[in-house]
Amino acid sequence: MSKNTLVIVESPAKAKTIEKYLGPD
Figure 1 (cartoon, rainbow, N blue to C red):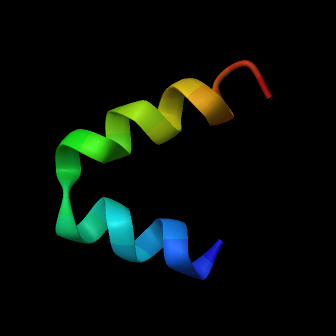
Figure 2: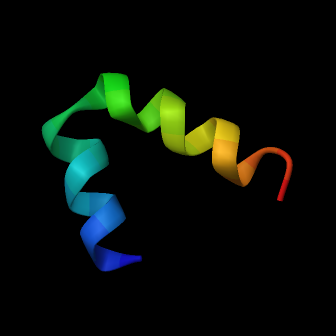
């Protein structure tokens, strides 16, 4: 999850993509 956090900080746009994955989960 640490890597995902770095991606969100680096690319806020990707944060929305991760939210979609965490949303249904």
